[in-house]
Image (cartoon, rainbow, N blue to C red; front, top):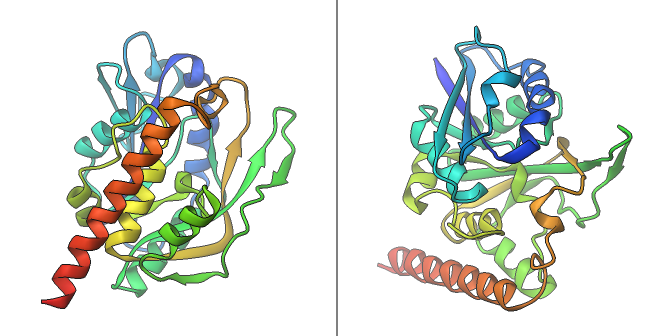
Length: 251
C-alpha cells in the first residue's frame, strides 16, 4: 500500500479548526493502492488536539513536542510519518476534494518531478470563498529555478507553499522545513525548487482560512529586522542548494 502522509502543526486555539480539516481528509478519494495517514503535531502544551478528533481512526497519529513554531512542528510530524509522499495541511485549512489524488497522480506519472503545488482560494469567516491572487503559472511543469526567479523579482512566491506535496527522499534531504518563526514553508519551497522540477496543478487544492489568529497577521511578518533576516537566510539557503545541484550536474 502506498501512503501519503499529511502533516499538520497545531498550537493554541487553532485546534478548534481540526474537525474541518479532518472532514476534508475524509472526503478525499485516492487511487487504488493508496491510503493517507494524518500526523498531527501539537506545538507546545495545552493544545489537546485529541479532544477534537475521533479516537477510533487509526490513520490519525497525534504527537507533541516543545513549542518551536509551526515549521519545527511540521518537521517533527514528518519525523513520525511513514509515507513516500508528504503533504502539508495547516490545522485551520481544508483540502479541496480530489487534492490528494491529483498530487499523487502527478508524482506517480512523472518520476522527475519532486514536488507539487496547486491553486488556492481564501476561506473567509462567513464560509464564503474568494480567489487567492497569486498570478498562478500555467498548469504543468515548473522548471527547476523558476520559483526562485519569481520570488526574487516579486518578493513573494508565485505558488502557495501551504499546498506542497513532496517526495519523502527530497524532503529528508532538506531536513524538513526551515526552522524560522515564519516563512519556513517559503524556504522549503525555494529549497525544493533549487533541487528538482515541480508541478503546478491548476485545480483548487486548498481552502486557505483567513482569520485574525494567523501567523501571517503578526506585524513582523512582512517588514522589519526579523523579516529581513528571514528573507536573507532563505535566499542564501536556496542559492547554496542551487550551486550544489549545478555542481553535481556539471560533473
